[in-house]
Image 1 (tube, rainbow, N blue to C red):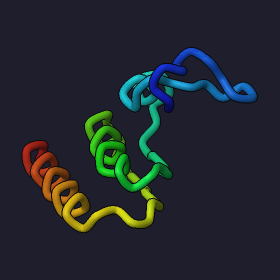
Image 2 (image 1 turned 180 degrees about the vertical axis):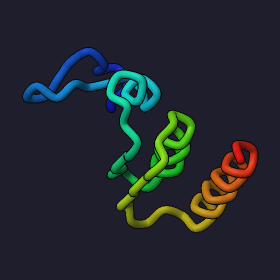
Image 3 (image 1 turned 60 degrees about the vertical axis):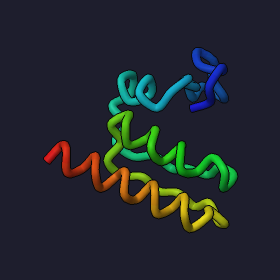
Image 4 (image 1 turned 30 degrees about the vertical axis):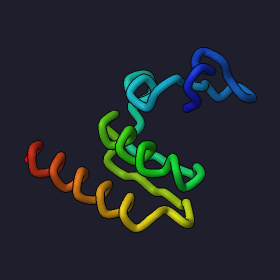
Length: 82
């Protein structure tokens, strides 16, 4: 998934503009996130909003405040869906 590069591919693997677009096209349920720290929280929340149920993020150095806010938003979304 790379915004602005949707509709292209890398060695036959399709690229999508959004997580939602990728989920709709492939039925994906997992996401692997490897982005710089300042983008990690947004990437995690976009994956969750797109319908991803397993999110793995290997980014180091995410500010603790961003981690806490992201966690709490995910908990709120989970409770709203339950």
